Amino acid sequence: MSETTERGDRIAKWLARAGVASRRDVERLLAEGRVKLNNAVVSHPATFVTKGDIVQFDGKVVDEPERTRLWRYHKPDGLVTTHRDPEGRPTVFDKLREQLPRVISVGRLDLTSEGLLLLTNDGALARRLELPETGWIRRYRVRVHGIVDDKALASLAKGVTVEGVRYGAIEAELDSRKGENAWLTVSLKEGRNREIRRVMVHLGLSVTRLIRIAYGPFQLGTMPRGAIEEVPPRVLREQLPADVAPVPTRPSRR
Image 1 (cartoon, helix red, strand yellow):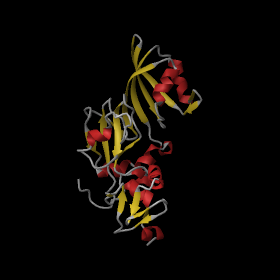
Image 2 (cartoon, helix red, strand yellow):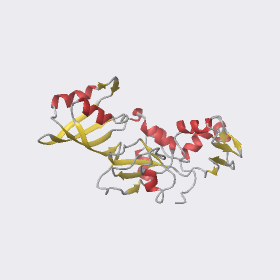
Image 3 (cartoon, helix red, strand yellow):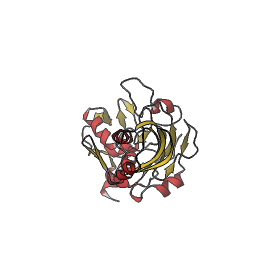
Image 4 (spheres, helix red, strand yellow):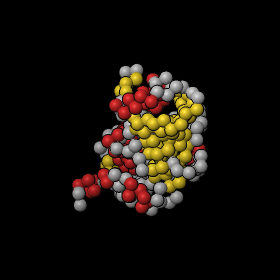
């Protein structure tokens, strides 16, 4: 048995797999003194959790991580992808609280964006799948207003700098055009905050609708708005990169 197995999991990894937050955010929670292990406040992410230990977050006991699970959700517009919104706007997680265990999102869709949002109970998995190094393409259908310049769209494949921010290669294709309104298909690997909207403004176009239709191998397909479906474990094992393949820990209770 390896030393890591004997010592258990680092508490940041354990909490991320339990769906409390991403591993990076867990480190912030530790620094804020919001996590206890066996009734003692934990401040260092290198602390290990072993079988039988009791972990608390904000005074509530956290269940041991379940097997890694992933859901596809057709997010409608009008919801923010955050657990707590300081402006009091409705959130994805409020909407799904009665349908799912505690989950976090793989990336985000902003308030007015729609389409495929992946949700998981494994924070470490979410963080890994967000990284450009994973190589997963995010694909969108984008309705824009303005005059579309085909050459300007093609130039995005080389990357573009907008207000001092360098964006990587973006594949953008014109699907249809009617007057000053057009539909585009836009594909990218990174997906920074409001990247598509900012790049389109840079090209003299305003985005009037943005729908994510694919995230890596997972497709929106014909899911109705607001629908949610769990990805079957077999499909999850087949589609995840080898270094993040899910390892079951205990059966799901929900």
